[in-house]
Length: 330
Ligand code: SAM
Image (cartoon, rainbow, N blue to C red; front, side, top):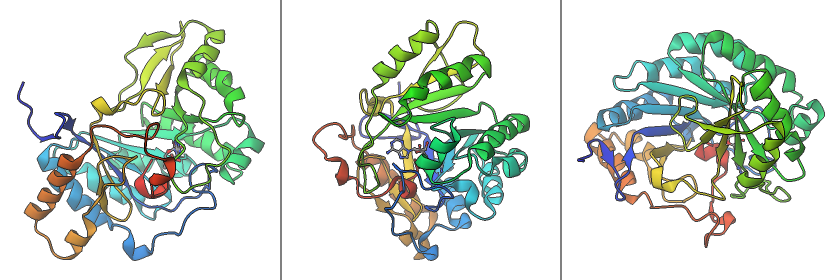
């Protein structure tokens, strides 16, 4: 079958753009940004008009799905305006946000009205004290209200992302599993990736096989297609449950063969792989007056240099990923 649009050197169709709209966050999670980062200068961050232009050009090349992330996207002033600016672009049929949920109570409805389709909310614990330890903020209640607000606004499916860490929150695997049965949550367990310059010392990955085994205490997990999305998660369900359990396995079973993404860092670099340092600066071109054809050429180039797979659990040392997650966009 002949593929059209953006196709990389390994015959993967690239139709999904993830954009870090800010490196700033209103939390300071131990494994993500804690203690690590020289923040980017205001002028280094892409302006909304620049982001919109990139997405418009990329949409003309075959990008149909956009995720806005960060940092904390909802903490950037006028973020609703950016959602609306992306939503009006022809060819973009899915806009999602990854958020810590703190500001969702305030913005969920406006975001839906602006054209946002759905949200993923990151939440690693259901315990207030532990939330403070992991994130540095006393905001668990705000996140839980935010999740409810997202449902009320119809930002469906609302997916809850849980990074499982040995000795830190692994004892809550069953609590999150119960949420899929009792409250219809779509919970995705994510393997912690020990990379970057962040506070990853003492944080250890719990392999998905172990999480899966532990969940069997709640019933037999049956494979399902899963809620709408573009990602690599594999989905399951407990019998009779409205919700779902997803697993994302960057460490124990990478999913590079089906990777359909390009990323844009908060300072305007195209990054073909989360876990590889290859980057192409778009911002420089944009600010030097490049025409659409030049921007297209750079996007095409990023697709061509996209590597076959990442090596986080192989020969590339974790510290070789030189940027924090908040700039790349998790
Ligand atoms: N602030 C938003 C949020 O909290 O969802 C978006 C940005 S955050 C970097 C996106 C996701 O990356 C979160 O779900 C976070 O848990 C995840 N993340 C950050 N560092 C990670 C790591 N080292 N391994 C696995 N997931 C990580």
